[in-house]
Amino acid sequence: MKIVHTESSMGWGGQEMRILAEAEGMRQKGHTVFFALSSGSELAKRARQKGFVVHTFCFKWKALFFTVGKLLLFFKKERVDLINTHSSLDAWIAGIAAKLSKKPVIRTRHLSTPIRGGVNGFILYNKLADFVVSTSSAVLLLLQEKADLSPSRMQCIATGVNPKIADAVQDTLIFRKELGLSPTDILVGTACVLRSWKGIPDLLKAADLLKNHQQIKWILIGGGYLERYLVMIREMKLENVICVGHLESPYTAISALDIFMLLSVAHEGISQATLQAAFFKRPLITTSVGGLPEVCIHGSTGLRVPSSDPEAVAQAVLKMAEDRLLRERLGENAKMLVEQKYTITHTLDQMEAVYQKLL
Image (cartoon, rainbow, N blue to C red; front, side, top):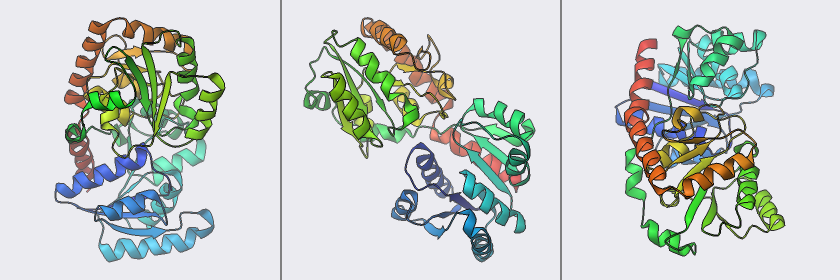
């Protein structure tokens, strides 16, 4: 198959990581993958570094007719079989071009953000897409309700973990020692692009509530709006919080945790970092937003807390910190869940089956 991924986003986060990982996997399966991306985007740079053919376009409404025309020529020249769109703008623009080319379209919806109903949702998901893939089961209900999409035309396919990430883990004891931790310290943290909806203020407030528990340390792994939270840390005088910023390979840091948390208040699919932490046998603390409950199964793989409730977060952390056997049991179950349902092999096999079905 010849597959085109379109993406209008300029940034780099879980969505873009999924697209690139899927493309690499499909290439290994013998398929040809092209990218149609926004000029100057981080995904364009990284896809080229991986050896993919990348074409850039202006995914803006003002360039609608020009971009549709360029896409039509591109689809014809490369004799593509199908198009996979990912964000709203490219879903509209590339979707129109694909329909004019009579090529099947898969729309992958990565986030659990609200879906506009009415004509907008109906056109975007019913007319400009032949099949919709979501990264969270929670989104499927939204698609049925807001876009009147038939269950036969959608499927949840989570972004699976590549077990090879274990090869990138270096000595976690050295990592913890470099952070100034003692062997008895409990390291609690998150790994994500530090955006407004990731619940970082709730993590910091929980750290403040537990600052008298000196054996509990907290860590933020990730870039994004880090400076905003560094200001909060200084203002709150949180000496128990460590920030390491963006790590190109965060796996050692995640593996060095005793407890992984993601306190998202909106927009979350099935978080890749949460799956990676689960793969490393780390017990989870998450909210119930989006796809997080599909991995953080309360009492089995972790503990779930209400959104925007630092007191509940602090209680969950304290419960785990004081019970090593609980942490070990939750971590073992989390690893088992990933191996059963959420590896990259699961993702690729399911996506390939959808592609073949449409062809």
